[in-house]
Amino acid sequence: MNYKNSAVVLLTAFMYFTTSTVQAQRKSKKNKEEKTIVEAPFVRPKLVVGIVVDQMRYDYLTRFYDQYGEGGFKRLMNEGFNCKNNHFNYAPTYTAPGHTSVYTGTTPATHGIIGNNWYDKELDKEVYCVTDANYTSVGTTSDAGQVSPFQNAVTTVTDELRLHTQMRGKVIGIALKDRGAVLPAGHTANAAYWFHGKDEGRWITSSFYRSDLPKWVLDFNASGKAVSYKKPWNTLKSIDTYLESGTDDNAYEGKFKGEVNSAFPHDIPALWDENGQFDLLKATPSGNSLTADFAIAALDGESLGADAITDFLAVSFSSTDYVGHMYGVNSKEVEDTYLNLDADLERLLNTLDEKVGEGEYTVFLTADHAAVDVPSYLKDQKIPAGYTDNNALKDKFTQFLKYTYGTEDIVKNISNSQVFLDYKIVKNLDLELREVEEQIANEFMTYGIYELVFTAEQMLENNYTHGIPYIIQNGYNPLRSGDVMLVLKPNYIQYGGTGSTHGSPYNYDTHVPLLFFGKGIKKGATVAPTEIPDIAPTISAMLGIAFPNGATGKPIAAVLE
Image (cartoon, rainbow, N blue to C red; front, side, top):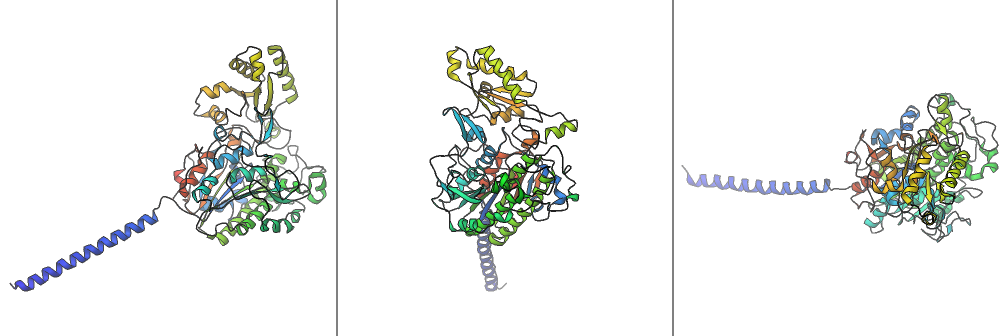
């Protein structure tokens, strides 16, 4: 054998093996580095858009599905993730607590927004959820801008984004209603804007955020966009195709001042002065269209989604609530309002594709509460339902107080289905607070319209985990809530004889949509239970930021890529 040749072969083989090993190691290291980058435990969309539709029932997604276009609700459902069994886990189900719970990831028990208005036990008067006399209006000479989010005791997902990005990520809140803009925007927002109607018809803000309106808002207000919607309200499509709702003119619907019936068309110009001028737009689909117009203007005006630092646009569409209250959930007007909103959503999504980039933004859509069908309509369909007789209730309860305690002053206030006691009088009468609560609770249960009544003592002593007690407890805040909580029977409401309302712990008020779409979101659906406080932790987990500091919800793992 030629040992010299064998040595050469062995050396060549060794060098090949060594080189291959080094190359393999480098390749493996490179793959690991690439894999680390790809599998970072967060995603950074250029923009998150949170959409809250005021008074939207879940079944509006399915009921009007065949009437929707391809680019609005259907796009979110079919290309995003649909949580079909999403509920509010507290009551009362109102606008202010709803928006706050979506963005804080918790319930009124923690964040403290227990209603749109509530009786303040320390101030001994009713307060509004965002009124703050420490600040002045910006954009109007009225007091409509004297607001701030100070009543919310915890942070929002928008606050946490601002903190995480050293205040470089921009946050803007927009809604027709002040509370729909202010509470989602949070404590640290760059701005929140809402629509001041009456004879002004302009978007305004509060000095809490800034001392003047930016040029893009001034330009929008001067553009005449709001007044362009002063036109008759006709159906978007032929009314003959609106088979998903009841008859057009019926006894279950309200009417604008000056109308002889509730049927289409609604002559907005003729009704203008008698119905609050620009405020009238809020109760038509045009209010949502105007909101979409302003949100689209904000994308450019605020340069949202223009760089790699995530921004947040919180938009609430409020007209759906005004229309629902006026006409009821089974009306042609509600159906038409959602078909118009569907077109506005498509317009907004197309603009996001163009300005931010398709696949570069994330959207979630939900509601602040749902709504009950009109009880008088339900009764006519032989479904148990009814209304409270407030005068008769007041007389009967007053007699009980005088007979039992010798004075009606032992009760300071009754609001939001809660009874507030005067602790000084309870003490002066040498009574035990627990006993007074129980006596009053038992009295209300004899009236025949209440399903359940709870006392503050029960809320404090027990840990409810399911059903209506769980929902009521999540809405109970020891510092702000009353001493007795009243729950009407299903489909019973304290409201007028026409139109729909909300506030209860029942499915018709708690079951709302929850859609996720865009960057970082899986395509799919689930019927597993999800709750409103899960939204903020889900977005926080996706972004890799801290959860809101009072969050009690959990990330929805199925939603995230």
